[in-house]
Image (tube, rainbow, N blue to C red):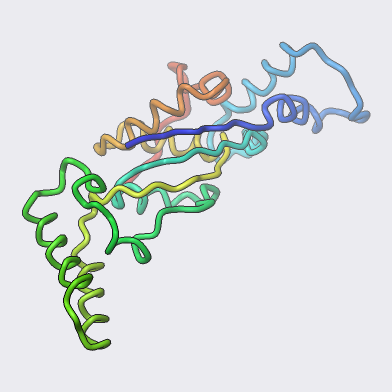
Length: 204
């Protein structure tokens, strides 16, 4: 798994906006450390309480290369969108599977798929037979096929992912959670370094 080209937007603006609920005049000025401490307190509130909503203002984008089985779980989060991604449907018959599959895919499985693709690319077939062969290719593609997508999300959703997935059995979630901890102010604003951090929700 690889996470590259990450960008984080809106930290300063979100720190300032987190004071709006208690302001009459929104053109206020305050010391930077005061705003940081306030967002830290709000961000570490119990998930689902609504007090940590300001974390939605810190937007994160990154290129993530991960196996299909990880992408299925990532797709459960409602504000974790795919900007653009590699297409298995369009490019599976052109991929170098030896490079594209992770180390957990059995060589026999990979070779079987390579044979199907070779037949698809090089054997003259009637349209219906070619269509059926393509269906077989898609159906036999291993879940360990690595695909890259650019994602967009925010600190609130990453906080949910972190507490739900930080102890997950898949190594990809361990890598992803470690990456989160390295984002600017992420641990300060979500409490991921705190002994009193929000309790872990169930995960699948």
